[in-house]
Image (cartoon, rainbow over all chains, first blue to last red; front, side, top):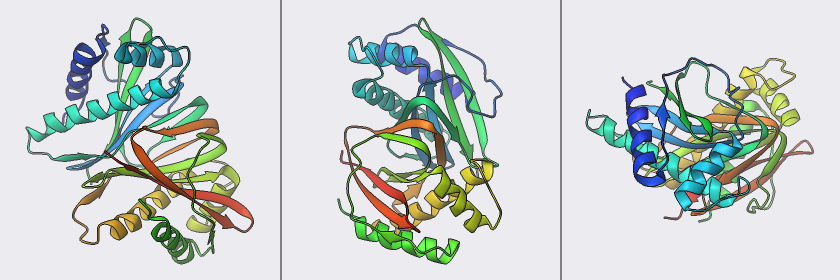
Length: 152
Length: 152
């Protein structure tokens, strides 16, 4: 099952049509633990053809840049509106993946987004699950799209 | 939305039958403070005809003693085993809640569990959701189970 290109395409499309920020997609990176130096994560569960958690992880400045661009505001901190915007972006990304998997006959269902934030947190998926981690860069810095999945 | 009694019953049942621990439900409430300190949260998405998240939030000390009872092995700090155990606990609780909301079993699907832990983190749901939080007493310590559902 192919994930990286679908993640890149869905992210690029959302940034081009909803957020209007220049975006550079990176290549998949191999990292097991959540030591990404991030302050805020938005996550959404997917189920159906496979079970997964899709996450967006970013430093505070990147989260504010993305949320601010989407909402047309200039947030001074990662506030409720910023978190809500990041949650909505994750929701749209999951929707993009759902659409592209649907063309391959794989049906997916989405849960609702949640955001995690703070100076000290880690996120863990069940032992034995798979992970695809793709970095992206905007002017404000790097962020990561993270898909953890299990085909069982 | 009020699934408080079903969640309380499912939690008592799972703790009693799987972990051999007796827990007592306290009065259902809603979470007003997004922050957690030295805690772990296991989360599972509900997708399909009902969209939401089911979470269990535990102070680290409670999580290690629950994991010890659950897996029958000594754990002293939050490691992979604790994350897997708390994620699995969230998964079993979500399964019970799914059965209560959707007796046919065909309309709600569960995502992969995810666990978040750390010294200080916040968990926020998107604005357009309703939630209920049930605190439980376990030998004088407290943990809670939370259900968030999309109201869209």
